[in-house]
Image (cartoon, rainbow, N blue to C red):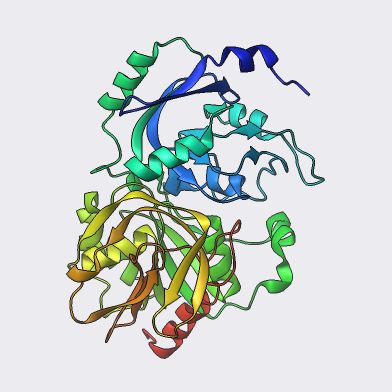
Length: 385
């Protein structure tokens, strides 16, 4: 094992925040400098799913768990997309893998994917700082070639994610049918795949494979389409339902997608997750707000107001729908028990519902998995044909 003692002692690499705070460590990823938004994730596992989640595009993810990398990386098996999507990765201690499934170490995978990463960072102090002062624009200097003051200036000069359309950057180039056959099917359990009963068109704002797997297992044939696909083109396919996916950055920067979503109201059963939930809220005429440090992790308690049950959920978002701005014909169905923010809603007369959290999340709990069955039931009770 290469412990890089000299690099550890020198601590030449650093993370600079826009407020002037600097955290020093050493490089364990790609040897490049980069700007991004610093956030923290409270999950103890699931780093591969996090790294490949398109919703993290433009962000530096700091893991609060002290040791990361223990079980390595399994390319093509645990990925949520085709590649690593984060702009940077920050850990306290990067470990070598010790797991029979591992194909490559996390450090080597980060280098192959071109993602800068820092280890040796006091992630407890970083997390407390971001919790107290909020997510910030940041700069990773992987090689120590840039003075700290200049790194802070680069963080400050970056345009950031507010007001930016990142969904258009991460969406697919052309439509495709999700196919869960072959090796992927064997890895995740072919016996769980139900016969096809419904056809669903899923808008890709940064869609995760976990969502596609869950819909397919609930009996849905899913066609994934680019984020900008016109509603008229989708309606012409006569689907049983429309799904609005998760995705990165600021929902308020996507009025073009919101206008498109409005055209589905009352015409086809619709479900949204995360960014899709926020876009649905905007299509109802509500507003969204930026949270101080967002929700990133797999241990967030959510209360289902329709049943009184509590779910432990996986989450990844920096924005939330403002409850007070929702119209009278839309009701809040779920709230976050940590801060009271909206975690779910449904239209009172139209077959439309959404959740802010991730019921499909592979590194997290499965409390919310029945939501895909709810979508199937919604389509059964509201046939388009």
